[in-house]
Length: 158
Length: 345
Ligand code: SF4
Ligand code: SF4
Ligand code: SF4
Ligand code: FES
Image 1 (cartoon, each protein chain N blue to C red):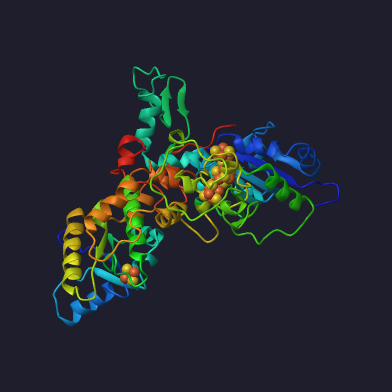
Image 2 (image 1 turned 45 degrees about the horizontal axis):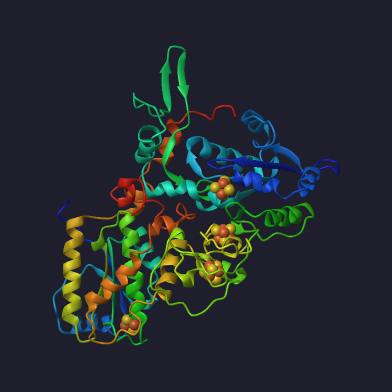
């Protein structure tokens, strides 16, 4: 693995807790890995599994979903739905060969800038150890489809 | 076209089971109207044409081509290009052509694993020398060629542009006839460019007559583990019915007779990834975690929810039963559990 590999993490942060935690980490000048690209969502329940899968398909090395602690979601139980989705998605992604570290669910309250920063640091290191995902290049187009057609003979008579 | 010249109809099967062809024949005596309205230009299931006949047609000679089956071999792909070139209107007919369907479940594994189970490990196969299909084989008389078997199954629209998509495994005969009748009578079809025809726009649940209540599922059951209540929504009973994440059009055939909807009419309008949509739907109807209060043991909560999810056997093969090739991830990486053991969990 080349030493310069910098994982790209797409981070979906809920507006009421985790985005504020990220804000706090910034204003408190906590040093942490710059590898997460934060996207603010109103609640962790806004993160459809399709968003996660799409991020993986389109070049992310990992996806972090961060929300309020259970019992503290601004919309009562949005984060419980997020947790249920996550537990099922995790089981599904295992079958696809996506390592568990690549999709993580984190709880970080508005006051927990340090928790969020530590989670990003940890995930960055885990992804660095796993290496790039590059789903589009290696899994989707890396299957020799076009090349196979060239080596293939013309269709025989039906 | 002169007054007496009929439009040309083609139907082709690529990687298919033949069921789509049978479903067209199942439109009953309407098939005579089809015969009256069209000249058949290619239809391997019912008439004897050769590929060289098709190659000899001018471009755009075929007015309507119903292409069923997925793209799994180089021959399938070559026929897709040929028929695209020769057809004015190309329809991805049925789930295999439009979503990948059952053939694309092998995107959960690899070509090597597929060959291994088909040609080597299969109990009814006697192959002591371990012979596997080779695209080119040298024999004293020369070279023998067979199509290349791809690692990844694709849909028709992943190899050529299609004008319309007709979902279903297979499309239901009344839907087929409705489309053919519209074409025969010259009724206006939606603008081409991959538009869905011959199906509804809502979910299967809307056509399903089972009683629906608030869903609070405690665990899931496989079909042999439970005798379903005849009147109540199957999903509510913990049977993995995909009606909630599947396009209507069949009249909710399966749940009406006590079988779960397996999702053959594909994703809902506006949804790209049927499996991801199903994950989302399932998360909303599971009971575990409801009413969790602040300060709860978060790891225990995740474990409790995880236990319910563990009762879902083979989530990928279940949620993408028909839509694997068209899913966002398309196929598994070769390090996935699926790829190693040839499917399952
Ligand atoms: S869509 Fe279904 S019926 Fe049609 S060819 Fe595929 S498996 Fe057979
Ligand atoms: S989930 Fe299945 S059984 Fe329940 S209403 Fe929908 S289609 Fe009918
Ligand atoms: S109920 Fe579902 S699986 Fe059955 S025919 Fe309809 S769409 Fe297909
Ligand atoms: S508002 Fe933060 S998780 Fe719902």
